[in-house]
Length: 206
Image 1 (cartoon, rainbow, N blue to C red):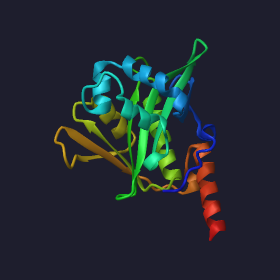
Image 2 (image 1 turned 180 degrees about the vertical axis):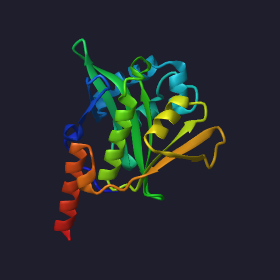
Image 3 (image 1 turned 120 degrees about the vertical axis):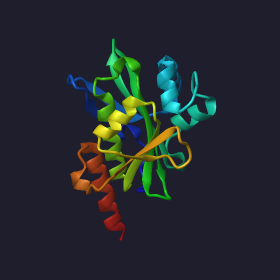
């Protein structure tokens, strides 16, 4: 995986658009977001939390929360999608992704606040994850979901993912997509520029 500078997290933020044109900011999670993120997961419906974590949880266990807020460890990253509502930054979605060296691909999982589902945030966030994966040199992107999670299955299918049986759990489906984007073809501007910068740095090093 291409190394990512983490000294200025805000330079890797992106502005996405909902179907109605309203903007959504996607940025890396920071340690100061711990309580905000915990409140977000507590506010999800029981079903949404079950779908996200493939099991029953009422909130993030402290060990998992630590993984969320300390990005870059073991090539794992967490982002939040936020909107300013009544003057307050509010989380409306989140995603985690990590690099799997064995198959040169990014594994990811995501959720959208129940009150904001159906607004195009999930599709925009998934598209952004593909940009991030391409910029960091991954050849593919994949995730696992419950066979009963119709919303995630529909989202992945619409984004062009293919589906296979999960290798270890019959209750799950695996969806995956091959990524073959040259740096200049990456649609997200910030990650296109990042990929081009990575490429230039590599060329100079050689």
